Length: 364
Image (cartoon, rainbow, N blue to C red; front, side, top):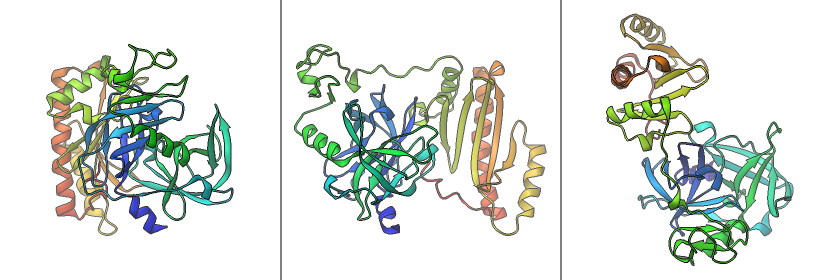
């Protein structure tokens, strides 16, 4: 089991858009990333990030609403391993499976379960039902058998259900891949007649086979933030960051400043903007000097607050701003202050007080 999990660590990809977060997996033989259509819906390009894949923008090259599938262009790294595609004939009720993904934006998690039903039908599409825990962010990740081959694409769960998840069987993915590679360029499956249409074959805005209106990924309007979100993005740009690479779903951004990872979230209902810099983890021993240092800095660092997450033992440096007080001049000063101090304090805490680097700091 551990060998399988480690094998997929470098090919399971985290995907982020201004609207959502999800998972994908890289298929070397086809030179593309597979995910769900609902993860990338409304976007012509998305952010990908992985263990050996640097954070970058890639284009959406295929969308398929009927099967909830999407393909992304290949990342630029070439040293990614090949992975095995299984067959539907090998899957039976009671078989053990493994779901891998990035739920809730976490970095690479795996859950084990059992196939409950191999023929759950919804909208004329058959799904595997299983009890491997799937959460928001798992969508688009691989479902594996115990031989380490992909047998499905994790797609949806029953809301408020007790680990009731559904995955698209490998047969749908394999046939779609086989059809797609015969085409040239960006493509979409018509939701009415199910034919795959390329941009070159389209009839204006309509499917050349049945006349249904279709939209290609390249025709999606670029994302434009509004209100406070627009102000926050303007501040990030002025602070020298690529805001496209920073977007992590609605009203959420992630910044890498040196060795520090900073999450910025805007809560519309309360009007509160929170910047949390996740610096490092507490050591197992000699913790008292760190607490003393953090308490002292809370009195000396203007506008920022240190705290410790009791569950993950993370040391966090936070900035709080109410939206009614946010403007470009003061906001830029506050954001820059947070970014600079985060990159400064994590080194102090590790090098002088024995704190531990977070394992995902290079992956964030």
